[in-house]
Image 1: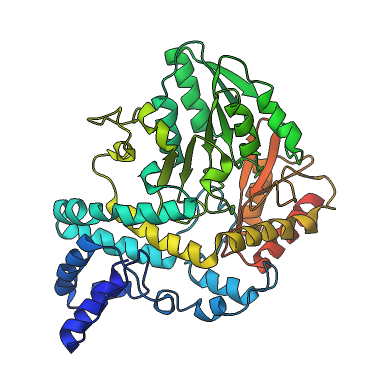
Image 2 (image 1 turned 45 degrees about the vertical axis):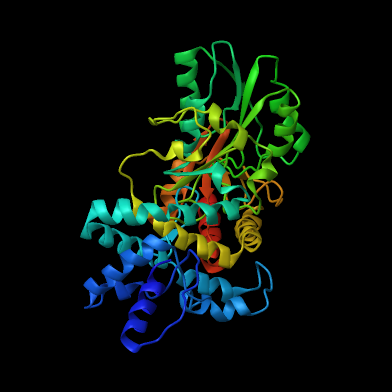
Length: 459
């Protein structure tokens, strides 16, 4: 957002050129200019430009590796090898490890890392000045661009540190009383389950548990598992959009529609679906929504967002103190004290890369990669899948188990013998290894995974 403008401002100053800089929020590949010998002059100009707006240059300057690939005809998730090879170059991937645990947290693109380094160094010049008077003012362009991706009004979206903070803000901010019922699943994320347990212990709300048999491709069965638990005392239903243990996609909109018919509110945990699946928040028909940005958006670690339906903002108390906790202003949820402004500012650079790929193209590629390895091992003796191969019910995450072998044993062999990093899962009825590629993952890496699974199963 900043670097091109600073470079151009200095260039015009030195060469006598004039002209305007485009008003956008994104990245530029020339961030290393901040480290040149004339760094003091750069910083002075940077502070002026940052205070006014967030900027970026042309696509050609920002993504030199992708220019040709982006201009060429898109062939499909399994054919456009050159495009995805160039995407890989945007990441600093370890040559000694195949990372297939992107479901936990994803690596940050090179340009975002450079931006993060720049903003940290800028802040350290005079922290209270550059952080509070300069970078803090640039949260609004980021909010607007994230809101555009999410398909919502920027005034309904708050920036915070992760899905846990987003969802806990809502869980602890809801006005609930003893006897109110909350419908949730045993397959929800532990931090959310624990938050609801605290509300039950503190306020006497009743937790009504949904059990699921996964994977499932039956929308009626999945929705009815929740709907059948609704009573006159149900106040809210908590639904995980994409279940982290196995990648199951849940029919949130259908559950939400049934809930709203009974005056029940809906909280969607979208930690693993935002910036992976091609959807907008209103498509889920929910009232509250939380996600992390350091997963599929590949933003810096410790970034997230929360969305609340406009008319419900005033009903939710902020998790941290605010002088107007009953206000209908979304920024009341951003009173975090000292925070990482560089982390927030660098998020826009990851957003640009995501938008250049495109949500639909990204989802199709991730589903292709999951099925690519699953289809090659589905005949392996003793193997079991906990993930659907249908694009309606699964995307990037694929979880498998092998009869007679513990998940931890399999994941350790993958790491020690094949240098493949995946994670063992043992949760409720799921016992397997979760495999999660990302946009930088190449087919030859998954071929090594296929070979490893076959050898481990045959051992």
